Image (cartoon, rainbow, N blue to C red; front, side):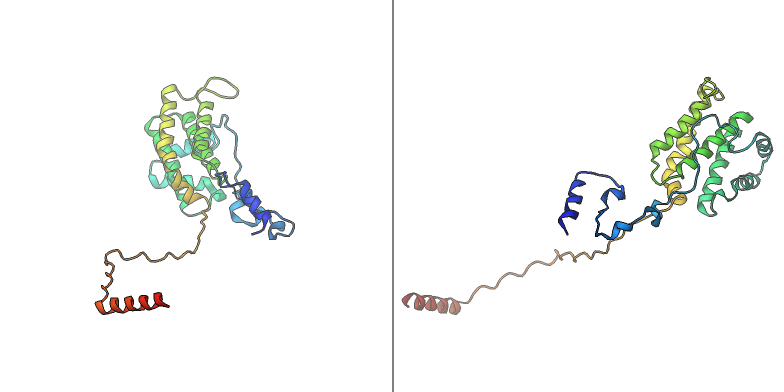
Length: 241
């Protein structure tokens, strides 16, 4: 290792972070001179447009479409309608199924709570936008997801137009936040695993076999008397010389 490489590692010795670019060594004669982040899948972010928290009542479904959607009673029809709303914006597979189940459970909650059209549209839009926010980048933490959803909820709970409007009551706001924590935030690792690219680092390293502690070490055999007499004679001869 050259002194330049060693100095570069030494500057980051006390830093505990996972940003790969902070540990790359850039030199004039280094192979990383022509390195570009877009070459690696880990740096390629999903093409998702994130919207800032604001009044988003009809973001997931328009008012007319939401009326048709709430008339559906069978589980299969509700899931099929949600899947058709997603279109090609979500890939097929487990990620798409999880999103459909998410919106189905939110719809079920709205019907159980007897929410009107406006409240149902706002809550569906909140979960829809929060899911887009979480899957837009690879480094979105649980704290950021919670803050984003909370800001959306405040936009639909405070009477301060034009930035917010009071749709949910104080009690309903509390119920919405509890639903989000139980339904989405608690399952965040599963959603991340199924909806975002996963990366792993493998290092081949063979471990030495552990010593067998059950076997007792053999005791050294005691020397015979003849061997001791011969060793004494040899020591005497050596001293005379």
